[in-house]
Length: 284
Image 1 (cartoon, rainbow, N blue to C red):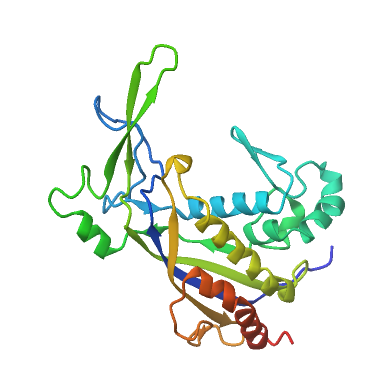
Image 2: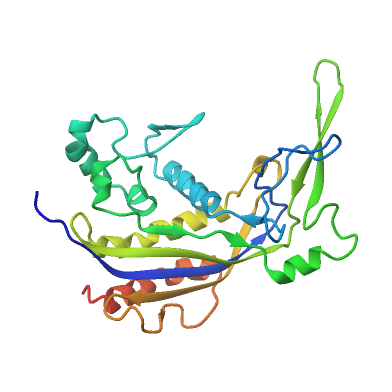
């Protein structure tokens, strides 16, 4: 087998704050909840006890929305649902032919990754890393004021379902982070590769897929209870920087003119950002 070479050409870093425009519920473990406590709790940092947004929730929601936006086949069972994954329906001997061809044409799987058992994915690493996002100190301080919230850094929202036959009320309590809370800085790391199975020009073009995912998410919701009002978020103070393989230890190159954009700004400036990346990486 011939040696395969992959080279990191550069990394685009996207940082921003996330504002909870409505109450935000990202579920945690309900183990040990006492009688009379809330029915659905939120995830918290074990050290600070502050709520946070897991990178897996942010990345998974963006991917799910992009799959539906692009009409991709839902072919990979995960728990009680299915997601899209290139090559899922092919046998092992077809992975390197049909599966690989499908993968090379799929921006979503190129950006967000495929399971490790996909042999064609080994030579083409996942482009996107999404970090966990912590609550800002300012929001934590505001929420921690005496009597501001029912629980530490969170509110309790009571919902009532009505039995349509008996008309009996069935109240339940949901824990949410209050509207107006800020999480940040969030960080997305988008890697650009050259070599076997990798095309740096195509990777720069795929920055559009990442921005589409952010736009779809801002127009949808994050976490649970979204169809009942929770989970609307806004992306604020967006900044982009680039490190290149020419000198990875050099200060990163600003791609956003030191301005802090909102999502509309990023969408408008994206072609210029892509041109800057191509120029910095000498891609013509």
